[in-house]
Each structure stands twice: as structure tokens, then as C-alpha cells.
Length: 124
Length: 124
Length: 124
Length: 124
Image 1: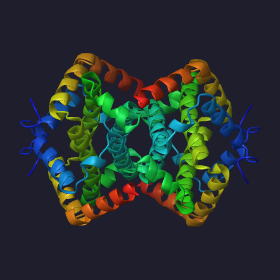
Image 2: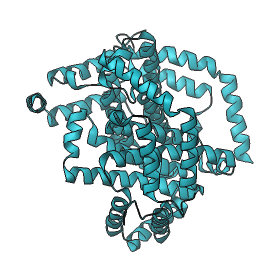
Image 3: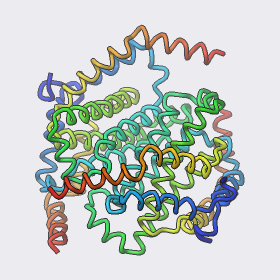
């Protein structure tokens, strides 16, 4: 299975089944799912901590390390899907709506102008 | 569009196009994407901070607040997809592999035993 | 040594000496110190994750667990002092200024009114 | 008042008085104080997000921005002191104990060896 062929609902279903089989539903409070997000994001952060961009790039060249970081990303996704299920949120629809809003707030021409300003600043 | 009909790749494509149109690719370092995850998770946390489970449940009954939380979840997903693209990670495949591992580490019978122990403790 | 007898500068000095002896000064960028804060806060969060208030209270009755949480708090303090040193910030002066502002924004009479409203809501 | 002249207990006392005056004690659960830490660390992170080390250095040259970051650091300290009070932890004693342990785990000669290895790697 791959990102090409997998729907968001399929992944949500995997999380929901995992939770139901373990009879955890009653214990999955939104606050704890949010703490879970924080804890797992910090696990990603540990891979990059005190490394500069080149050191990180080198680390990402190592398939095993990329795999380990991928598993931390998966853990964040787990809590994100569990929270969306718990709150009855259609994550795709909400995401696409939010992206539309962001597109309007930061249209391409404006974003490019900011980037070229930053690049000019960087060039001195 | 809904979770039922949307593939993970479609959402990834939306993020990739958004980034490319704005010519941001060079600026999207993994460390910054991770900071972005942290910042957006904290935005979710603000909705639940200093509220107990009942107060949160009440808040979730309000469609506008649920929508606002949904947009924060969307922001976390944005960074998660951007980081996966940046690292060349197939998030669905990695997620399903990780869930398989977790299933083996915490099989259903063991998880249920833990829950019933916690429930007995809670019952005093 | 105790909180009664220890100045903030003394603790800052301990961090500064630790860093200088290890010749780390050049590597302590503000972004990494902030990631360090996030990572260590998540270590505190792990102690409370998926526990309700009563379970946490019980855990805090165990001197060893309280000690373990104390060490995580110490790790957060380490990064907070290191960041303050790095930025040349007098943390006590800044803290007391900020508390003054907060006192004015949320005076006692207003805060109590909020609390009693919340309590009435909780009482139904 | 300055870091030179201010004891940790003095700062703790300010937080305790602030909390008691507002009759908040019953609402300050450890999990919420930890969420507060996370939220405030993210506020620091926002100042550094998508900026490279030079851009951050430039920002830190601006007294107003340094002040703003200082206030975010103060907010983290607030929750750290509140959590320590709530848990009955002497933060100075715990911090110095933890630093002693870290010194033994990572003695100066070993830390310097790591730094020079990293520098050699960086030099190619």
C-alpha cells in the first residue's frame, strides 16, 4: 500500500479498529491525544537537535535513519487521526478548506515577493 | 472531497504545489518543519488548556469551535505532509508498517488486561 | 543548596560553566535551545500521558516518581537558563516585569469572578 | 531586581501568591501546567521559525524583539515554577543534582572530543 492508493479514511479505520479492539475508546480524551501529538513531535525533533542543515542532510542520506524518522512521523499521524476520529472531523475536507483560506491570505505573487526580499537580504 | 475519497498522495500533492508555486522549496528545512509541527500542536493544546474533560466535551458540542480545532489539526497535517515530501517518505506505507509493529508489541489480549486493571484501580 | 538560598545567577553560572568547559558555545544556537525546551517538556508530559488527575496524584505520592519528574523539570530549566544566557536576558527582571503586566491584565477581582463562574457551571 | 540578587524561592513565592490570590489552586493540575509549558515554548519557537541562524542573530540585535522573546521565556518560567510548587519540588537542589549526574555522564574531556570530531567533519 502506498500514498497513491491509500485513502485517509482507510488510515482512520486502521486507528479506529486498533482503539476499539483494545477497548480504549473511553480513555482517549482529546487532551491526552494532544499530549500524544506533542510527545511524538518531540521524538522527531530529537533527530534534528543540535545538528545544522548539512548534518541533517547527511543523516537523511542514511536509509535506516530516514526509516526511524518515518516511524516518528507515523506516530504523529496516529494521534492526528485518532483526534480527528474522536472529534468527528473529516480531515481531508477541513484540510482543503484551510488550504484555500491560506491561498487567499498568502497568494503566490505575495509569497514570491517575500522570498525574493529574503534572498536579497541574504545576499547582503 | 472527503476522507472516503481522498488519497494521501492527493493531499501531499496539494502541499507540494503550494510550496513550489511560492518558490519555498529551498527554505523548507526539516528542523523548521518540525518547529512548525510543534507550533501547530500547541495551537490545538490552547483549545483544551485548563479545561477538564466535561468542559472540553461541552466545547466540542459547539460546531464553530470544532471547526476551529479542525483547522489547527489541518495545520499539523500540512507540516506532516511537507516533512514527508521533503524526506521522500511514503507516509501510508510507513504508518501501516509501524501499526503492525505496535500490534505485535501490544496485542489485543494484553491491552485489554491493562485496561481492566486500570478500571479495577479506578473502581477502588 | 535550596531554592531559599540559591540565586538565579548562580544557576545560570552553573550552566555557563558547563557549556564553556565543553567548548559548546559556538554550537548553542537559539533554535536548538528551543528544540531542547520542547524535547524536555515532552519528557514531563510522558509522566502524565493517559492518566487522569487521580492517577497522577497517586503517582506523585511516590517519591521516586516525583524525583524523576523533578529531573525532567531540571532539564527544562537547563535550556531556559542557557537560552537566557545566550540572549543576554536577565530572567528575574523580565519575569517580574511580565508578572506585573499580567497582574494588570487579569486583576484579582476579575480572576475570582471567572473562577466562581466556572465553579457555578461545574455545579450545573 | 536582577538574577544576581533574586533567589528561586522569591520567584516561586511570586507565582504562589499570584495563584492563591486568584483562588486558582484547585484548578492547577499538573497536566494543564505541562500543556502550559508546551504552549509557551511554542511561542518562543515562533520567533525563530523559518529563520536561519544569521536572520535570528539579526533579530536578536533588535532590543524590542529581544524583550518580546524575554517575555515568552518568562511565561515558560511561570509554568515551571508553578509545576515545581504544585509538586513540592525544590528546583535548585534538583537542578544541581541533575547537573552533577550529567557532568559524570558527559565529562569535559569526552564532550570536547565529540566537538572536535564534529568540527573535523564540518571541515570535511
